[in-house]
Image 1 (tube, rainbow, N blue to C red):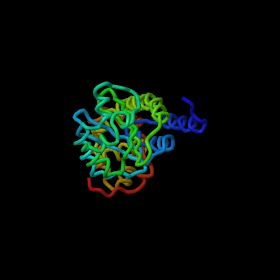
Image 2: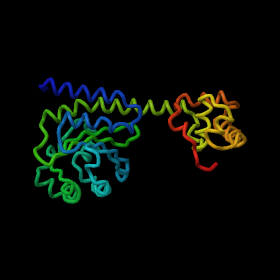
Image 3: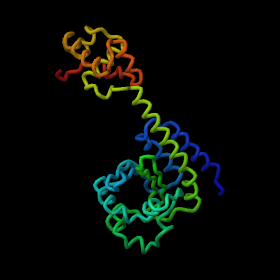
Image 4: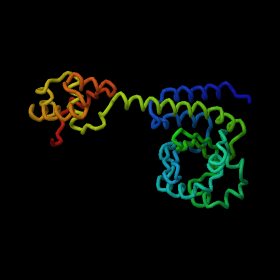
Length: 259
């Protein structure tokens, strides 16, 4: 497969962006680079649950697709040639709808009549990734005009493993962050504000002034925090914040919500 140097450079930029992901939810940041690599009307990242009804997506350009039609797509997913093929075979290649059905056959599908025609899509190239938990991640390129070339299909196939590897790494990083953070997710919003200020070295009196509450209220919040974090002092509690850096710009403003 011959690739111009400019295409290789764009492919490398995609891999570079993938390497920076820290959580799976950040994957949409790579969509603009994918859009530059394989031009089309839209590029969409979808996640599809095991029951095929929980379908979520992010698109580029942003909001190019109508969110209200997501339910229509989910209800007709069983007709999608690419998803059906992957579910049956696990084929790792990127594929076009035209690799399976003719234009006339595609137009006869309810999936086309009720979904693709409504969003102006005549051609699609997609690659399907299956993370360990079984939720499919699908990257799809859409066009109203000419079909995708063999080179574009092969290029997307080459990028499948870097994308899958990036999602695996992001999942591990996210898990490690949650483990490091421990039970911080159990804290209320006000308790998080208190412990973040503790981590900044504030005294109870200083925290009370920042949050516009009494020092006694701060002390009560700290009792609850120690219990939830399973620690006995403010130094140990502050240490739990190392995995979740505080946001000074938010903390320096008075918080006016009631205790």
